[in-house]
Length: 61
Image 1: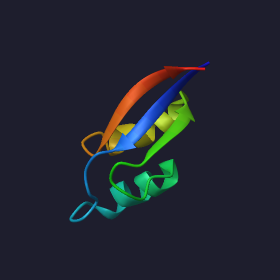
Image 2: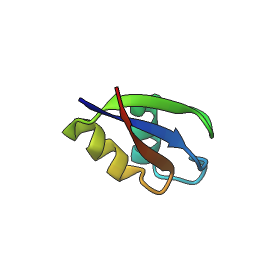
Image 3: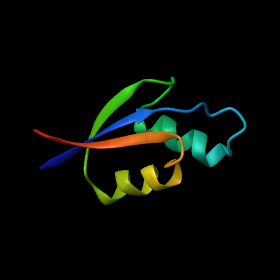
Image 4: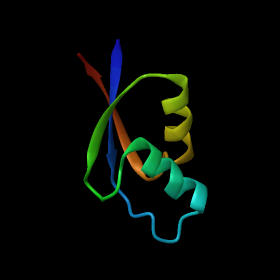
């Protein structure tokens, strides 16, 4: 199964509350922090919400 490496590249300061919540749900708290999540529709939806704050790469496991 394909996995996604999600890295926060921008701050959540002055962003909407739902975007802050989406980053927390993904497990991101700091700039430069990365998490690996499975490529599921729920995760892709969260990524779309904060696409301007994160960098996404595909990782084969």
